[in-house]
Image 1: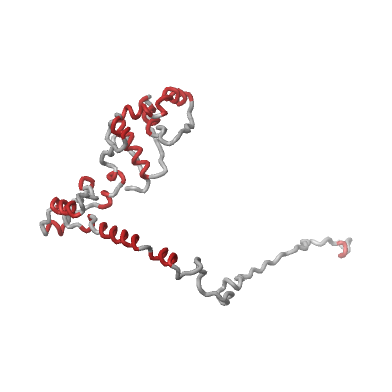
Image 2: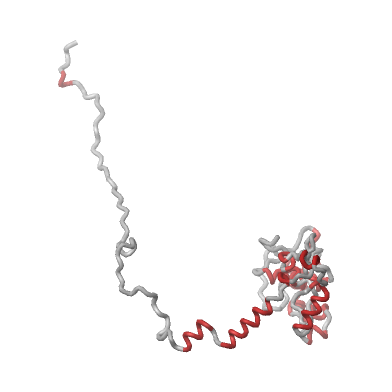
Length: 250
């Protein structure tokens, strides 16, 4: 004891290191032209897109011509006879004993024999009222047979129409390519039969024994029309072997 001086004692305190601290200060500043307190323009009205707003062209573009007004009024009158306003088939119509067929006959006579609403495609609820949601689905819009308009469709059978398509000439080659490859890309012109015929060729080759054939379409109407066309060509009823599925449709 006493052999060491106090100056020789080592410092046991931790050595403080000099650190550079960065202090950030945030300021929520909005530019003067966005805070709404100051107005930096003397033009309070919207900019005119035309040189003379009182000109005839400018007025007609906003109001429309007399012909357009007449067509609009005529269309509005035609819409008034939609099924929503008909009493026949509703509860009130049943109480008033209104005959549906007589009302439809009056409409056909009044509008020159034309009937815009198809009774066969109308769905009724359990209480006898019209179910407009079910009646206006795409499947019911296309449930009737397609009317053959062109001379080719009237004079040729469905089988002859299928064999007339360009894809029919390379059917065997396509089936060989499909058997040998997992993924193929077929490029062809519109109406060549890529969608309606390829699915039938694959079905005829027996690929549906272990699965189903899927064909995507970008639009709802296209999905329904393609499925309906394939069902007609195969002689099947839409919804049995051939069907379609649309997102967000109950």
